[in-house]
Length: 467
Image (cartoon, rainbow, N blue to C red):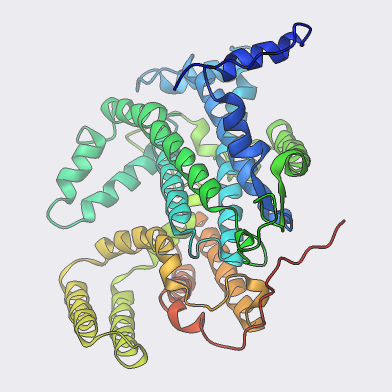
């Protein structure tokens, strides 16, 4: 294709000439129009659709503040804690950059959890958006990896012993556990070698994968189109101009919408950074302001709040709990056998798998299955597009009791998270065990309960009321 540069009038503004020069050599305007300027989005977006943009904002905050922190941080076991103190006390505005980064980590997870909540409510993972959801799950796993590897870097008491506990979980895996733990640590104990490899993953490896997944997530989203609170496919009703009748250009309409949301977020974010950066010990724990002491651990070691729901599931898996799990697996196999229309071969395969799992429960330690359940509790989210068998996408048109199911699941998740921050007690573990059953029951029973009840008719066009 021949090189063509658009001719502008001699008196055209300098900015227009510069943009024309760039567009002839790089599709800058086309990229803007494709990805935002002329990207048509459903006109009935509500408050829940702000969190995608906020996640992008926090990602930028984390990258920028991370770059400035790396300029002064020393990934050395003898110097790491002192370098963080140097950033806080002697680097101009270093305290602000550090608090923005630590607060941004928690803000990232809050926003992502709310973003996923919107996906649950409005069925944003349903066909044809399965791949968008899977890319989003990849982003979520990368965030968890970033948080895990970054948790050790301050080299405080809680970060050191928290990393020790988490890495030792790998040791519970049969056969390969000890070697895997050794490989993750890079040494027989958490040491300078561990700090260096965690630093490399936190600063280089995972951010590169994360940015690639974010790009894939956005490309897939803009290829298929955004979902909406009604669960209606707006591309099924096109106007004479080829654009959906129930959509509007993202710019300027949703640009203004997002700027308003960003303004509110920055007010709250700034208030936390300036007045409560530790957030009562949930964002920054008191024990992490004490240098790491390999000879004496803190009285209570727990992960940061955004890991605690899954940590509660790990702690809930005791030897006695294994008997309840065996009964649950047997009941689930019976349910699949008599309440599904699967082929006989698949049913037999499910029965064999159930027997293998029950046998494994009797062979391996409860600690191992605690690690397994903790991992599965995260990964099972990726199966949502295939577990949800509801004839409608949006919660708006589902039976009322479906909303109660979602509410119970949400409360259970919060309770598990709170219990994970507390020292273990018999009562707390028993509550966590009940919560574990509710958590997994929500997903594993979804093929049945999501299709039950009387559903409201879904409109053919989106419902929209101008403000």
